Image (cartoon, rainbow, N blue to C red; front, top):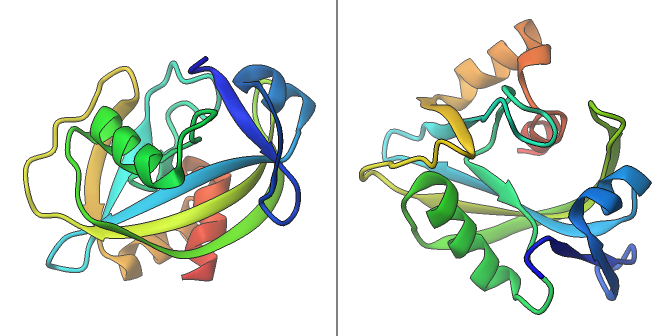
Amino acid sequence: MPDNIILVDEHDREIGQGEKLAVHQAGHLHRAFSILVFNNKGELLLQQRAKNKYHSGGLWANTCCSHPRVGESLEVAIHRRLQEEMGFDCELKEIFSFIYNIKLDKDLTEHEYDHVFVGHYDGEIKPNSAEVGDYKWMSINDLKIDIVQNPDIYAPWFKIIMGKL
């Protein structure tokens, strides 16, 4: 059941499960995670979502984001997805979590209890082309300026996260 995701209440308590696309069509609150990986220069690794993604294709976002599978812990899910999307793994630590509810393209809604993790990495990156259109390292200062100047090229949840950093 890799396409099923975990439905939660406002306290992140599991209350059920649902098929990923149907959950996003209905706008049900579900568990998710976002990963921010920095290098030794303090730059953040950004991912441009592949154009063929089911939503927000072509937008720039954090290093990696996804949902844990039903029966999968956040700890396992964050390392699995970082490896699947960006081709590497590193130590990750949760820094905060928050709930957001936003309308996306294709009549989808992102209503997530999002756990935000941070890590550090300076090695080789081997992105999965089915997931990632491009990637780049960017300083936080330059990124915050670019988000103000070019808000439409960034994923909405990523702009929320950046506002909280």
